Image 1: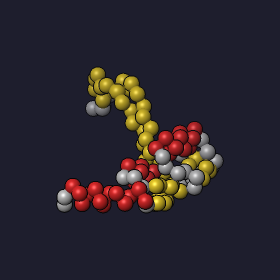
Image 2: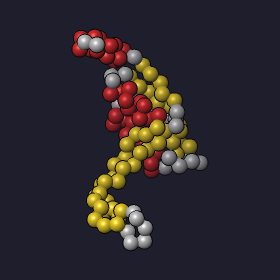
Image 3: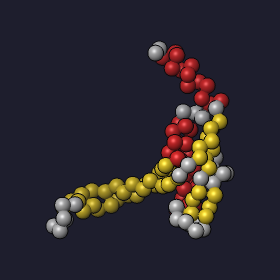
Length: 109
């Protein structure tokens, strides 16, 4: 496929509107350095320097669509908790419409 053809295919993506429905979650990454292995079990002991929260589950699909230029909305359920608020902030930061999200006080994010 030529470069021109690829550009033609992706050019129309910014005209699309997609609704993603599914399980959503926060993917949490701990970044650090391993200095030693535990003497009790063969597992690394990590000195954590940084924690990153990223959109996971169906929200990751939405994130990929936004990267292609697609106008994306997400419907799902989060907990009415701190992680639910972090999730909503990540949606806004990444340009995903989260107006269809429901916060449920009976479940954790």
